[in-house]
Amino acid sequence: MIAYLRGTIQMKRDQWVILETGGVGYQVSLPERVLSTMPLGSQREIYVHHHITENSQGLYGFVTVDEMEFFQLLLTISGIGPKVGLGVMNAASVSEIKAAVVEGNSDILTAVSGIGAKTAQRIVLELKSKIKMSDVRDIGTSSLDVGNHFDAFQALMQLGYNAVEARAALKMVPITVTDPQEKVKLALKNLR
Picture (cartoon, rainbow, N blue to C red):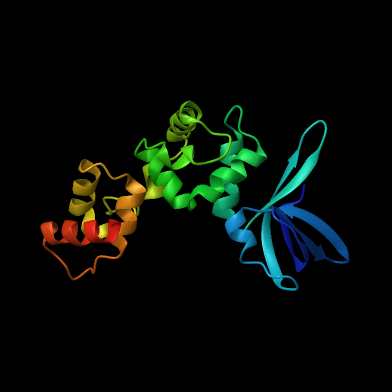
């Protein structure tokens, strides 16, 4: 079973690269956001999920072990194969997807090709039991990436914004702003 490769990017296509290592070229499928960071001729290290079925096999690569393990977790869900799994990995970062799952927010997955609203809800439901709060939040942090802005985060959620939008808007609010109302105002400006 292949789990890790290090080598040179010899060829690059829309969904995969050929990584030469030790004189052998391996075709590795990658999430689109990872592909964009891999120019031809560059030296790369890739963590690999070697997917074997009765009729085929394929290599799926990731930059971190966390990404690879999350991809493998997605494959445990009935009806989710490697192609849809890579689509999910393209939707957002692993930490954002995990946070959405913990919060029960399936919206992040409905933009993925091949995943409708019902499938997205089923994925969130199945993953919810497999993802621990500690996988998403640092100890003592109320919510991922919001830290001291948790009060404003909750207010934005109540205004109808999803968790990903609220987090992104709050990341741009200076940490020096302490008034919750001012945080919300600045975040709303960022959302426009």
